[in-house]
Length: 508
Image (cartoon, rainbow, N blue to C red; front, side):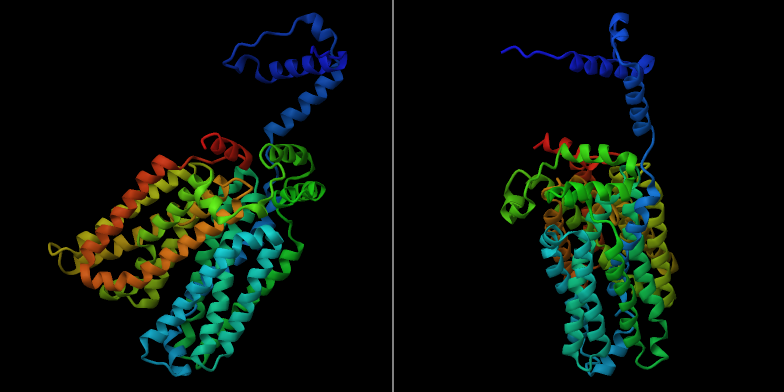
């Protein structure tokens, strides 16, 4: 059957050809024939001018970054709370154990810390299903509620069991918050600042950690101050819960739900009216109304998406196997050996972590995610080798101590440059929209499991193997991470989520 082409269609085709030629011109490396003059005379010059103007404006200008920034800042409150609750029991633990009657019981003290991790594992495991079922905004609000309730229960507890109940509730919110924050920030940010905005998550976590340490300073002078430390966290959690009611919903989630009109309205809030049509058209290239509720764990672990889920899980596993949490745990002892008080040591570690995160924010959309990951893991490996050298029998006295302190600060700094912030940003970028939330849940669950076992076994392995061998193992994992990233991780800088998805699906 031969299709007939109307004169109007022909006119549009010719206009498109002329527009392409005008846009490329002499700068194009590909030869294109100039349309004959008689064809140009048939064109509607006004239509061509309008098409040319709109196309040039759309391609030459990025969406205003200020429109989405307030929503990103609100979302990072969850990351601030994550960091705060990670560190809130560090300084007050001795006072807590004394007031609640389990002073000297190391098992009970360990439970106060570790039950939070158990709750985080549960929260992260279900985060994908909650984010897909209720939406990103409602998921944030749901994450804030157990943090509010758990902080109140911990602050008012009279027994160990009450404290543990509060810590489990808080941990559930901690596990739910980070994957939803990564999803939300990735989906609402313009491509050209997505890396910068993603770095806000790591910076907020650092600020939360430092805030908890600062708040805990008076705990030894003021009786019962540890209760205030828990109660203060209710303020940002309440702000998060209330502020999310006024934030934009993820257009990607709305589009997957078939709520196209609402998605367009949210794109207008986030990108401006002139970018709505192009954003929806870009979204339609990959998101075609697939039912994300039909995704099962088996499909993630054995189906065609296994490769990207494996890459994401491996990145989080290597992040933890690098020894970062062990270094945070052991840093106070190292600094005390060098004559530095633990409070000042925490400040040094916090400043190194925050400084690296700020530099990463500046470089994320310039150098790219892959480059930062490669150099970050390589720097961490070199830092661990400095620790190995300081622990060897060839170095004695102050030289070994200074090398150990310097290596530890360098490790934290290089971690914050890439291995800390990049996985949480990169994974929502490389996961297809249909599986994004649930795949993040699986990867974050891997993160918490490895985190738990590294924390559980670190001191035991340090006793059995000694610092030189243990730090050598950590360095080996960092070098393994360099090889893994070089072979498996693609660059996503400046690309839309749909461009990344189409590129990855073509490799499956």
